[in-house]
Image 1: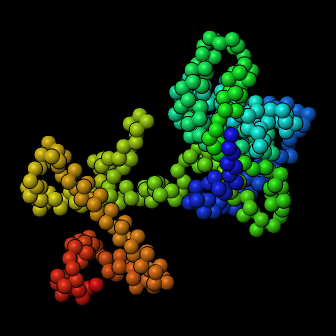
Image 2: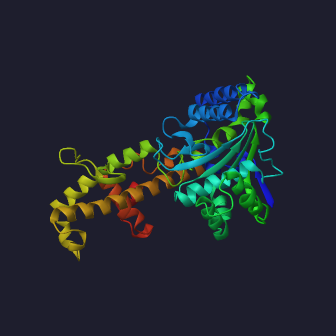
Image 3: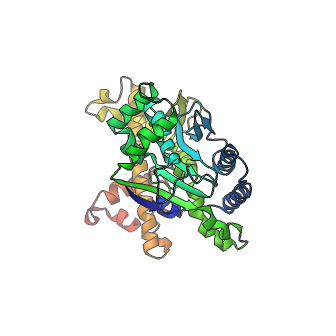
Length: 388
């Protein structure tokens, strides 16, 4: 068995790591983590320590958006939603610090805690057909091991022989029915025979005691990776603020407003639709495009108008929507280009070609698109050349 141990910073998405948490987030994290560590009690049960972990995660990250509790024999699970009926996203096996016999180490993973994870994972993945598991965790509060569910899927759920043994065990068709039988007779020999690399993220909170309890705020930089590693954005693989595949919520809402659209829900589906009658703004890009198309009778210039709808109203909306999206894409591209030009010229604002003194209205934007960008310099008329 080959191990690949990652430090918290190595495990994080680089773009996510670059987003600096605010002071309140870090202070809350430090307060809750110190409380977690200070409440460890060797004389108490694993149930006691499991609840400490649950309280810490809820207070710091997950409450009220994500439900955390036990599920069956699972010590703890983090749900993808805010109630127990939502799918499980993270499975956590918690041990007390003194339980060294069952706790895994960086040199030996094939111990009861890991074998338990395998069983609980297979129950979620095979029995409950849960495809939304993101990570699996083993912790004794001080030490944390985090495994990506993609690894578990490849090693365990995709192995037909293991899955058959698991289903036979769950169906009571083997010599033993107790979980210890599964751990010793099925999981342990299977794990021992793994020849491929097992990657995991590991950290020990004892190594963070100084920056955690230090009054020097500059030391907090040493805690950022740790703070982010246990967040919903990492453990549940949620999109984050500047994820290249997502939009900032306020920007997204403003963009819909500018276009003249609104987001609605139909059951669990999100739909984007034209604003309702009485709520439409003639100054929005979509409504202005519809007015122009209608008043100038532009639809009659289409080769096949029927492909855009059965009625005049449908055709006006669909053509206007395509035009609006095209315009927005062009504007966003130009804004990115403008920002790069300004940055390249060390903040010189004279390169801001989309500024209000140059682009005052839709007509100016239209000229920029079709009389400037769509033509070579020599083919542009003299008025346009003077305006550049």
